[in-house]
Length: 300
Image (cartoon, rainbow, N blue to C red; front, side, top):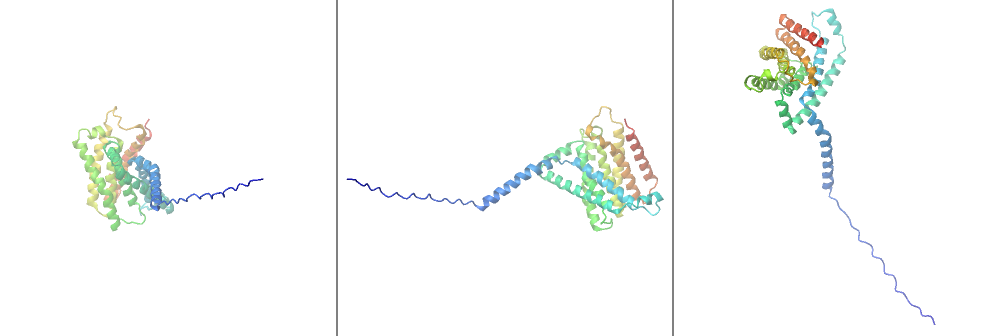
């Protein structure tokens, strides 16, 4: 006789509870902001830390070339026939060069403003360096040169006047600080810290004097020209009689020697604008710059 054993019905397997994870939207946004900050720190901060005032040498050269093109593009009425031929250069090239100079100068200025705001100790180190302090004049000189060559601003406008004050006041403040240190501080006297880059300070005065003369401010132009000329003679004589063992200029900065040409050349242009004619004084400064150029060319 067969016994049938009834097995109990299988118990249903309970379904696992569903867990819902809710991530606040604020945390997602915070993670996005954190990633953005990390990208900025890894890409922008190294550029800012390396962007010292010496990079404005690029804008100095570009703005000087822009001034040259503008001078050649607008010959005077009594110009020689060869000068009139140079005036046939296309104005588009001048506009492209001016725009390129403006773009590079604006970019470097923004980077250096960020450097001043975020890394003020690095800017202080530049100021305390006997070579780096001279390059603090470079951005203001570049802006003044760009202002004088602006195709849409005339010297008689209010905007030109305001921009002139904006760029000249820092040059005058630096003049007071640096020239005062040359006279009073034993470790910063000119005979110890003089180097070819020291001529940037006098170049700034000459550029400001030329811009003031274009506005018709002859007295202000004479003030800046006098400051520049007196200190140019002092710097020039000091550099001529420095000791042979004075190696205060690194080898990488040897191209700065061409500032010997820049100072008398800009002084010649400034006096030409102040006096209204290319007289004997302007010619003397021009011939001096030509002589110094030959000395640098044949220098062994």
